[in-house]
Amino acid sequence: MEMKMSVENAAQGLRSERFVFVIKWAASAIQILGYTATGFGWTPWNLYLFLVGVFGWMMVGVLWNDKALILVHIVALGAMLAGMSSS
Image (cartoon, rainbow, N blue to C red):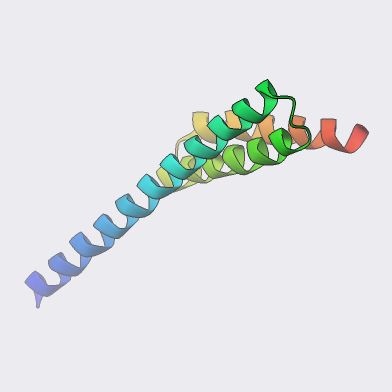
């Protein structure tokens, strides 16, 4: 019984690590596309890409309980949304 619980906990941990791994790399790739869109002047696509990337990294911060990651990305998300709504 105890061994079964341990195996289930290990499997849950791997799923969580895998989930975070996918979010991190997807958010990073999307933010790189945002930088590319900015370089080519593809507005507003660059902003949409940045929003998705910033939100993805904020979720990583939440899953890791990393307050620095959460803070940086909440501020970035707020600034982007404020800027987008004022223009």
